[in-house]
Length: 467
Image 1 (cartoon, rainbow, N blue to C red):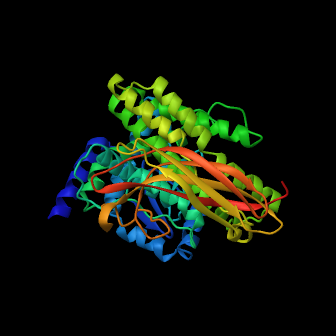
Image 2 (tube, rainbow, N blue to C red):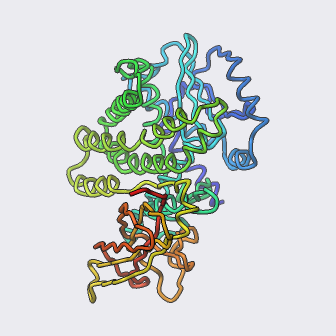
Image 3 (cartoon, helix red, strand yellow):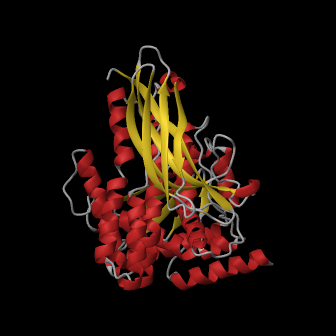
């Protein structure tokens, strides 16, 4: 009964968004894709059909399970409504981009966090990967948990905050297997899923507006054809700007975009920092090592600079309520200083085993614990080789008396204790053979009734050096 009520709430809300003129309200499965024709006109794309049918032969169990968890009618309503709003806003009218063409939305069942658009004289195709949809769901859930925690709101669902999720991403490259858990529930019988409907729709609208800008304003969104990595990023920045400008008509939508887009793009950037090498190595097209390096570098740097520009643009151009601006300014500041994950270098397994770190002096500033004065010594035990290392010092809170006050997905320290990250500082150091290097940092401190302050240090990555 509870599940039915939540489903009805979602369906009613989406019907308020959607236009009765749209032809199809549910995705249908075509091989390894989900397909929906928004405006039902004659569409025949043998290449797309062939691609989707081939994808069906290569679906993983996880990808099949993702489809089985979905209510395709609900998913169709949510995605369709977001598309219609985006098209109307970016062009000023319904059908303003499509004109007399059909629009076919395609969900490709893979983990890549990407979307793309192509247009023919008959049809506009927009392809979204399930990785992008999952990133939208996860970002909204994680930010929701973060807001609930900051405001002391009771939460009945189990999940992790955005800060904790980013910390897990930072730790992921140092784990035996690269994996990042979903921060929260995404089932239709979850009240949390219902509460995230509006911000999910806003992020989908942004994605669709960005893609439609490639058609409405020209393939390069009003820019010249790009010839290098910087120019390609500038084209995407221009498309982002067009998409952001569509939210200036509504204060609530503008605030929701400003609140959730930075988290979504930071999560996307972190994901690319972790998995870009895997993506390039698994690409069906072979690349030489130089090309691989350039592509990986472009993937890792594609989002952060766009994100910074987008935050400045949202603050200066959107109609955000004045009372919300101080919160957003502080929020954007935190996003800008968030450190992306760093993959261990190839030499880590050699050089890293010679490195150890020990606390030298820790002052928690009793009784108020506003700041932690922490010093750690990093030791290189190798007889003849110097080591270059990226080190990290963190301030944390740890549950008292072994209580599980955090999500079971929360990160754990080397002793297995759950913790919540307060802040971190990174620094690159060089340690000569048989030498030590002391690092002292001042970090913010936090005390909770159910958790005490802690501090830790680790080597993020290392390599041999001739310095």
